[in-house]
Length: 269
Ligand code: NAD
Image (cartoon, rainbow, N blue to C red; front, side):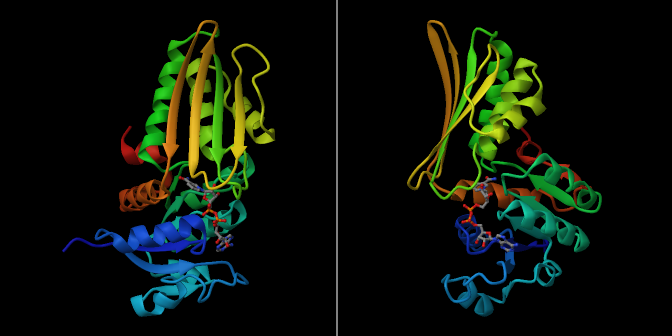
């Protein structure tokens, strides 16, 4: 019989946490073995099917990550940057594959994942959907094919609870465009993190963020020149696409050598 990996979901009460619980529970390729929420969160009993159903399902419901990770082969983590850093060290200790969907991590925080990745597989992506990862590849190709007459602008929209701006996906797209155009990636991501910017000089890349209502995630990459425009667009209408991608990453990571990977590796794009 093939081994069915045990999965722990962190941030279990969150928008993505709830979607992940459903996705993993519905899958016949993985077992949900634990859910983690931060202590002090008034979640026990609040989320139907998580805290109350947890015991019945044989799922560990805890605010102690290591207790849960010790029983698992993979941790799927859509929380917050500081929490993700703590989970990376503990997941490595438990030799779990750590799938990181958390966005808004600084360059220092990303660099701090390195020690954990010497002992365990980390798959991190600002967007886990197949469609967006394809869009990233297309963006790189189109940017490489066009000259600097085309301004490149990344325009994104999300629900009004989203903490970071521009989105992790917008940064992925900006970095892909920069790579295609042959300009400095670090400069693009720093500019993005510093705030929302319109491109100021020819050949530069601008970021624009819209926050409103319940938008799940919308991304346009606009290539605009005098007389013509190309728009590459991805619209997410259901968070299930991110959860399915994260589960795929958790399964893909089983038996891989320790190191840092992304969804391009997982999807073989
Ligand atoms: P959310 O605020 O609804 O959920 C986050 C949850 O994490 C909350 O329940 C919070 O209590 C919990 N949490 C925070 N610190 C914790 C800790 N120390 N221990 C345990 N739990 C902790 O947010 P969300 O909309 O679910 O998004 C979560 C993250 O995932 C964000 O960074 C978001 O940008 C990102 N995201 C990524 C993708 C992707 O495909 N990579 C897709 C959607 C969202």
